[in-house]
Image 1 (cartoon, rainbow over the protein chains, first blue to last red):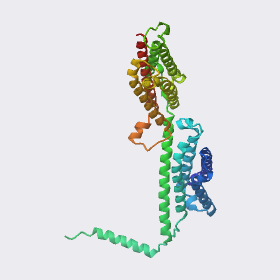
Image 2 (cartoon, one colour; image 1 turned 180 degrees about the vertical axis):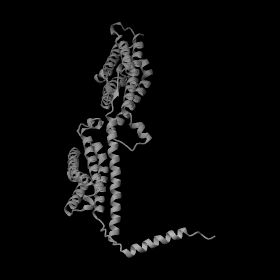
Image 3 (cartoon, one colour; image 1 turned 60 degrees about the vertical axis):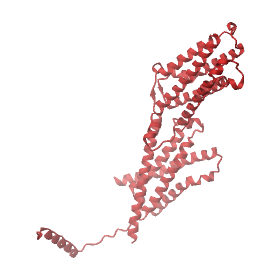
Length: 169
Length: 230
């Protein structure tokens, strides 16, 4: 069950990453065109996408199980990308936000520009988490010999005996 | 040592991912809630809205008083062309009050935030700009322009100017409040008061401003009625 869930979220995160990136690109291109700003200045918005995409590629190529088989990380990625998609959707389609109609741009740039900082925080957070989870410690099993087992049993026995001895006043 | 560092790195990784998870969940939930709040509707009936009916009554009252003046019957000291000028201004004002958006409220069964915004825009454009500023403000500054040589008008002019400025200021507050409805905060008691129920409070504010503007129109029409009957 866990494997199926993990596989589902693993694939979903790539899909959502693409949708989130496309929605951000669409809004940012329109925003910068409207502001007559050079599109090269928007690199700082897309940099976290590039970083996380590179990290995902490394995870996939190097088959890093610490990340790819990590259900919590995959769910978190899906949640972050879904939030970005949802905010993009609201910026374009939520007509109840007055500025969307007032400015007549068909995109609520005011709303989306407020969202850009949290978006960067979340994407960089995922990147840092990804890098930290890449390293998996080698768990070596330490064989327990029969002698050691006996020693531990005797020690436990001693403790029980000691507890049973009445304390002299 | 390597294992020790790896374990700690994983610990930091899980902490960071956990924080991102919490932040993102919060952000998603507050956005969902904000969207739901903005999509709220309010059941409405113009017949039961006392303020709306009061505005309509005041406009009718003002209309009757303004239209009573017949230049051919006037025998007073004030030049007739000045009174005709004022009558024309007041007639334009009553027409601006009865704009399409305001009259459309009669047929509404429910109000959305967009309806309130439309009403606020009609208040700004038709009532405040086209009526108060373009038509009545000249009466308020009669002293400075010398356009109207009517002593009683000069008496009420300072109050008229003050009332118009107050009306403009109250609408400026509404405009900034509504146009920033895309902003949402961590919910404090203050933001709860200022943001939640924006629809109901916004409508109450707009219709109250309409009512105050109608009061001003009635006052001027009262003055006009007295002036022409001298």
